[in-house]
Amino acid sequence: MQVLTLLTVSLAALCASSARHMSARHHLADFRGHQHHISYDPDNNWIAAVTEHNYTEAILDHFAPVSAVKHWNQRYFVNDEFWAGEGYPVFLYIGGEGPLSASALSKNNYIHTLARSHRALLVAVEHRYYGKSYPTPDMSTENLRYLSSQQALFDLARIHDYLTRSYGLWRSKWVAFGGSYPGALAAWFKLKYPSLVAGSVASSAPLWAKEDFPEYMEVVGNGLRYFGGGECYRAVEQAMVALHALLDGGREGRQKLAELFSPCSPMKNEFDDSVFESSVMSLFQGVAQYNDIYGGLTLTDVCNIFSRGNDSLAQLVDFVNQAKTKPCLDSNFQGTPNGTVEVLSETAFDGKSSSRQWFYQTCNEFGYFQTATTKQSPFWPLKTQTLQNVGLEVCKRVFGIAAHPDTLGTNIYYGSLDITVDHVVFPSGTVDPWHFLAVQNTTHMNMATARPIFIEGTAHCADMHAPNATKDSGHMVWARQQIASAVAAFVHSAVAAE
Picture 1 (cartoon, one colour):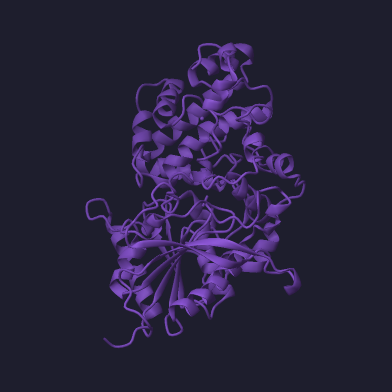
Picture 2 (cartoon, rainbow, N blue to C red):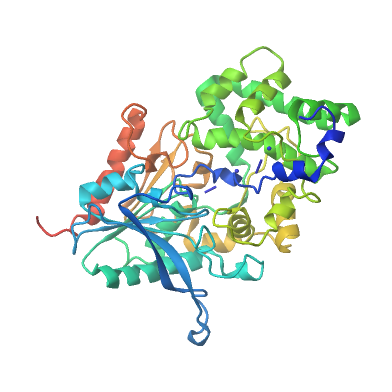
């Protein structure tokens, strides 16, 4: 689930041409790490064993009267290479806030390993409004009213019935899998439709809807401490102090900031400042959230950078230059083609972008707005990273939503961390910033068959990947053993004796 973001010698050169703006246009493609999540690989759609399908009887509004029912096409994928037929289990991979692809059911992921063991049918269902699953002609705010977790869960229930009839699955037990927001959906699917799934694996699942989420950055700080000690933590903190001081340093400070960090356009107000500081902060978020899962910098690398010399700004420049993926850092809230408001206001589907849809869900249901408002993280000096700047003002300007997200309603409906659900395991990593909103070892579980699998030193959704004998820690090996044992228990009586 769940991150915003990123040469010139002078400020004047930043506005040299509209072509420059277009080349730097970010489309918020890396919002909360979407560019890395294992299921979001829209360019890798050809895997021999996996076939792509459309469920043509998906319902637009499950809560409308029958006389007003409208249908749409929902994309799903099937992999039957291990399936032994009637009575053998079905493993359901739940899509979330990004496009799904055939790679979700490939050997890259642990669900594939488990399917081989249990001779299971693999199915992956794309979430409405993401990827190519378009329930409406566009993403106008009026049309987005059909985008919610409740509608998505009902979609899963409907397609469960359709596939059961199509494949003759009446005797097969289903196990739901998901990571991040889909991890929460996996738990909630078992909660709300207990007769449809025998159990769920809810990885890195943020069950607690929380509007102001400064704890995300606190966990990032804890990760810096874990891999680099207090020295690393303090070095990053000092760099954040120095960075914000440039914003507060008048014309001279901002000129130096432009020379060192190459914002995409001059900052004209606090909202622009917040986008720029968020761009810097998000680089740390991207490293911490995935930490060596997809290559690139690790938290250890970050701490090595911040151990070189005593110039905190030079260290930060070095880090930014190594971590950024674009020539400049995003720095405009509204008023340019790559402004946050402009990008989030784009209503056309393109099969890949997910930022507008996901922000709409956070504005309505979840919050999850990652701020830097507590002294418990090294990012507290970034004074612009407030709930108003990074969350509420975006909701207001993009969607016309002046109210706070209904996190209370979400938590009442699903139970938050007091969820009463059986036969669900909750893997989560200690250095994953989302684990604060997920089930941990200290979380009281109301059902004996619901339990945490808290993994020391691992990041977001790490357990969902295929085992890697050369990289997996002992903690990860243990965690996958626990997941395998749980899945075996879920499907124990599903398969006829061979």
